[in-house]
Structures are given as C-alpha cells and as structure tokens.
Length: 178
Image (tube, rainbow, N blue to C red; front, side, top):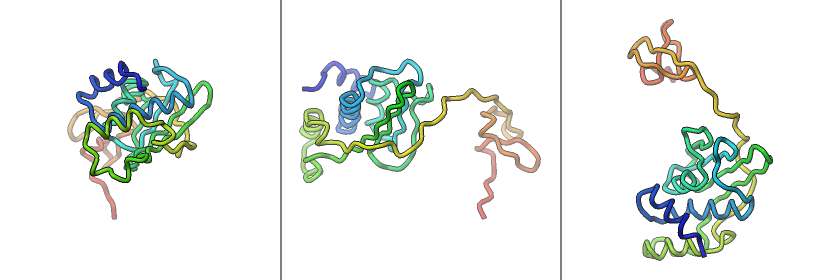
C-alpha cells in the first residue's frame, strides 16, 4: 500500500490528483526502494527529468528537487524518464515509466482506475531501471548580471550575446541561422 500522507502532499502541491502525478509519486517510491533517501536540503539529490509533465511536481514536492535550487534540470526529450544522482554517495539511477500492464488498455481505463492502478502496482512492473543517460551536472553557479543594450533588462552573463558590438539578452538577440 502506498503512503497516503505523501500522496496527499504531492496532490496539494500539484493542485489535483491525476495519472501523471501518480507516475511521479511512484517514481519517488521506486527511487527510495533502490536508494533510500529523504528530501534534499540543497543539491545532494539531482534529478534530470526528460519530460515536463505532472509527474515532475511529485518529484519537486517529495524530494525537494527544484529549478530554483538547481537540482532539478529539464531535458526536453519527451520521455517519461527521470535520472537521479546522489552527490555524496555517487549512486545514480534512471527510471523509465513503461506503463506496466495498463499500457495495453491505456485509453480504455477510466481516470480514477488508472490512478489507482499506478499507485498500487509494484514499481518493478511500472519501471525499467538503468543508468542515467547524462553525466552528473556541476553544482549550480551564481552568475553576474549584464544589462541588455536593447531592452535595458539584466540577464545572467552566460545568457548574453554580442551583437553588432553590443551586449544583448537572448530575447533581443537576432539569431543568425544560415
């Protein structure tokens, strides 16, 4: 049986209960089964998610992997996969949600029944386990801000481009793609 208190915490953070949130919840459960852990106070746990779905909200709320802390990184590959890194121990794990037995009838299963299936299925039925697809990223850095010569707004120095001898932000930069 899954931890109802944690499920409610994830749902409160996300705003509603849905199959995508259930996938993220089970991702956290599967991770803890393989590498026991709690929430990250800083960058001890890093998650590189290959999707930007509801599932990511469960990871944020339960593991405290967030964009702001720099320990949640999004790689837009469109796969329901999550790469986890533990800086102190060096342990890593990639979880790919394969859908389990419900994938055969995905469109026929009512929403609430699908949520319950995901929450109650064994993690080894729902996921493929492997090595992360990416290297562990460096720790988050603090960058200086540079004022854009076009709009006057400041942007991180690593996101500034030189255009006609002037420093410009990515919003104002005219990409040359020929």
